[in-house]
Amino acid sequence: MLAVDKYIADSSVVLDGSLKEAILGGRLRGTLFLLSEMAEYFSSLARQGDGVGIIGVEELKDLFESVEKLGLSDFVKIEVVSIDRRVDPSELDMYARRFAKENNCIYVTSDELSRDAAVVQGIRTIYLGKPRDVLTIEKFFSKDVMSVHLKEGLPPFGKVGKPGSWRFVQLSPEPLTRKQLYTIVRELVSEASRLNSKTRIEIRRPHSMIIQHKEHRIVVVFPPVSERLEITATKPVVRKSIEDYGLDPRVLERLEKSAEGILIAGAPGAGKTTFAQALAEFYLSKGKIVKTLESPRDMTLSPAITQISKNLATSEEVHDILLLSRPDYTIFDEMRDTADFQLYVDLRLAGVGMVGVVHATSPIDAIQRFIRRVELGMIPSIIDTVIFMKDGEVKKIYALSMVVKVPAGMREEDLARPVILVKDFLTDEVEYEIYVFGEETFVVPVKRGGERAPSRKIYSMVVSALKRYVPPGEIKLEERDGLIVIKVPEEYLGVVLSRGVAKLEKLRRKLSLDFRIEPR
Image (cartoon, rainbow, N blue to C red; front, top):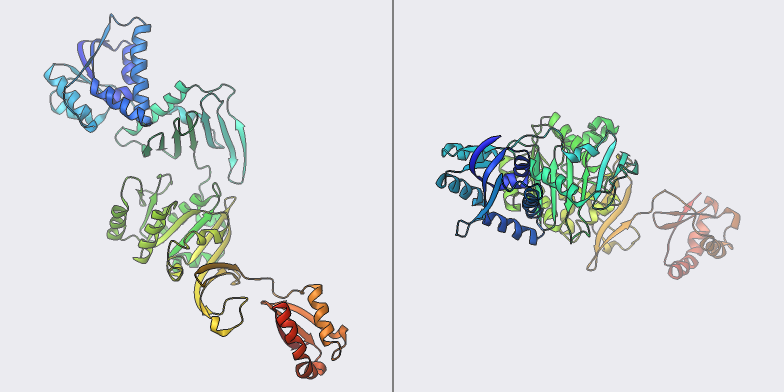
């Protein structure tokens, strides 16, 4: 037991619960001072729904109640003091150290920087910080658990398996209390404040927090945004190299030598980020400088790849960092709003190789997310390759190019215009055309599958028109590239061209179809 008379605690020991543990464990005896400004700060944050504020208020409340219930008031006297001035929240711990120096108190902290600052000033210090080998949230993850879903008043659940093949199971029969969930959040917040920690708060908003702990991505949502306190944690269960995807050598050659505006698309959980990680490592192995732009930073990558947080820097900062550091490729995981897409476009047009990760249910949907955000003519300059992921595998690869042509389905030459061709990279077949007609942008599926038979109705009408010139059994029809191709034996070709064309013209106007006559 540390036999001293006066202590003052900073915010770190309140947030991580180490102050309460030290008092209950008998390590602190005497008078404990707490700054009222610290309590007000936590209270103000809690009213805004901030997770740090909520944890701070709960810990202070629990501290006072524990001392009272356990009859420790005779051993520890808690006094709330004020420094009687408006204090910036970032200066609270500094004023706690100043109070310690002026009143000959021992400064109690679990923050390494605060400890060092106090020692430099000659302030007696108790350091309560200690690393935790395994946090509570990690104990829910066995080898094959992909994600853990914790909600106040419900048992813990988890997704067990791998992408594309998983089941949702109950991990324990006991419902979770709010106090248990607060303990999990408190551990994470405390660990994030440590120097050189593998835990960091990536996004902190009113009523929610996104925390990256080692390879675990953790989302915490507080009421009233969610009706109950909820924690969702995910971790990658598979780490692949680019070779594990069994890509065609032509695809690897394109990725290495010519693809510089890449989209990786797929539904949530389809394996987009896993593939992006593999692609980043692939580029690194080829001697490229690779950086990532993430929100949150949850990729598991080699130390040589710099991971930049989009949330901890402005778009202007990110723009300057990436342009001045001159990476060969930037992996943008993941693009959600217009600002993200605009940043992707700006960097790509500046010459930075970009790989963007987007949510989409089909590969063409990924391209459509750029339409109306940028001019149509710019799209092939910023996107040249689309990779669609499903069930952890590459299901489709599109290549984009622009030509001037008459769009499929139109016939008049004066309708020629710039058209973006979306081709299946491996077969070189055009699957979609994107063009402007009037004031609207159209994404049009192009008929594939080569030749096919037209409808029975069209066949009957063509046979009826030509039966005077060709035996009906000799007439064959095919639908090809939006045309009705009429095939007749060569000996009947002359009479059909001289006498049957007028009747076919009437049919063309009636059916809005174009015909072509060919010898069989």
